[in-house]
Amino acid sequence: MLNEEMDNEKEEPRDPEVPAQENAGQWAQPRLDLMRIKVAVDRVKEELRKVIIGQDTLMDLLLVGIFSGGHVLVEGVPGIAKTLTAKLLAKTLDVDFSRIQFTPDLMPSDVLGTTVFNQQNSSFHFNAGPIFSNVVLIDEINRAPAKTQSALFEVMEEYQVTVDGKTYPMTFPFFVIATQNPIEQEGTYKLPEAQLDRFLMKIIIEYPGLEEEKAILRRFSRDFKLDKRQEVDAVLSSDDIRQCQALVEQVYIREELLDYIAAIVHDTRNNGDLFLGASPRASLAVMKTSKAIAAMNGRDFVTPDDIRFVSYPVLNHRIILMPEREMEGFSTKDVINDIIQKIEVPR
Image (cartoon, rainbow, N blue to C red):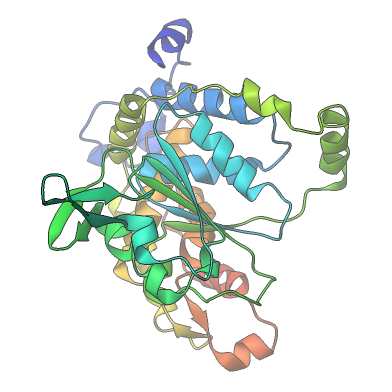
């Protein structure tokens, strides 16, 4: 889908001095042509902005999730377009989409599917559940009990489902966007730490600013039913996503920056403010997402700023505050910021 538009785009010439700034002596590969990612980001955002006002960080991080091959948890109060943005993002992708509304009575078989007996030919066959899709929106994920949430463990990590001893692989791409409301507690269940760790990022979104809210009112003053959603078109195919992921994987990251990531994550495990630190899966997530954000910004190398930008959404759901720190009003954001500030940035 991107090929025609890429033919009309010309990449700006790169500064030949950039590799020298990023330790050119270690540069062992030709510079990457990131035009495909630039066009993909621009086209997806253009479609989303037909309906969505603001939420630029949410859009960027959702695209980071897609290009990194990970899943995303979106947290925010009701009414700030969490579900709408996820649905519209899926609409910009020329792939299958399904939505699962999590409720307290939802069973694992309602998500994964079940084996049923066919009386006509006396055989069993598997009826696939809604999880068998390319983009899966799980709305209000914390409304289902632990039994149902645990049904997602295998599919989110291993991209396969095992039912009655038989394994069914997922098709590419497989991307889970889950939403949850942090305020409402009645009828909700806390996500297990093992479940949270399977999300590449947890994106916390806030209320729009005053000017953004004015723009929302003006845009929809004559569109009560949000008919503008019908104007959003699919602009990325599964092959486009595969090629973008391949480009992100080739983005260069210096050894010193890998050490920098390791130092940040390691500090969470030896921090007096934290009861639980982040796992090696978090280190890999920071590396992957920093490469994705660098590519989206037109760079084929990672900078410390990329790492700092992704550290909070990657780490905030993987660490647990000490009870006394929580009572004092500390937040995970405070702790992560303190860690980033005290660790020396590689030169």
